[in-house]
Length: 384
Image (cartoon, rainbow, N blue to C red; front, side, top):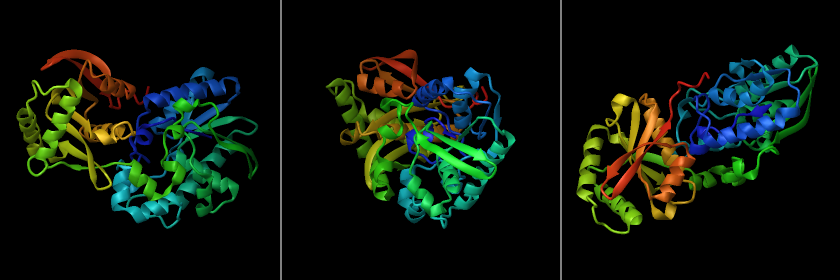
């Protein structure tokens, strides 16, 4: 059993159960490492859930071995109901008690529209038993999801739902090896990520899982709210624009704070949720501005301003703003994100390229040329 490679929810800190997320750039590096691990292992058949993140991960085995991939909806992640695609920070804020139940594998966990943990356990473990029965004396690779695998392993260990919480969290592309003989299951090893160098391990780069509970999630996960740029937060927006300009250019020459403010107010007056304030607990720490009308005809989501407060930078929060933009624009049917970045803004250039933006052109700016950067977020390639 193999967990899928790093996907958007793992990176953006958003809740993706049945939400069909894409694989991250780092996730594809994990898939390459997984392919190397399986290069000398004979595999007779491969199965995965029908979601893209597992199907893409299964290519590590199917592509080099020429195997057809069988998909099975029963291998899907737990359905998260109304939590689907919410930021974890939002759930910590508004549904803390249910999140505590979910984190502790409490069978009483309930969210509107979600399936129960007991239903998940029976669904996934039943699918794995069925696949094993269909392949006697063969080796099968099964690709599924973190909570799904954790609960299936709990069943095979003979654990209750609550006891399954002791199994902990598996890394992306972690491998577990099971042997079936009739109804008997033997677990040879579980959640092994030895094929991943530390620099591409998802868990090695995150800390929320080490201490658990909502206190750590309070400190590591952002939530987002519409920003009142037409009213009491106009000053905060203009101050952020001013700080960003001064930090980049070292001078205020050419800065048009009033012009920036008029543009964002015009956009927010039509679409209040197009300008979001990133919140860390009860403290505003950033701004993600989206112009829902610019580049609309091209199916592109424009990001005029992407900002984190100085004291919040370099702590892993910036990518969560990207996740908020992806979520908003994908829901609007946009297939790409587009932003402009000064060519000599090295930190921003590194950040955007690290998370999949590529230069597609150049435009003149007030203080020099701007690179036009784009990132594909659509679904056209999900079946390739």
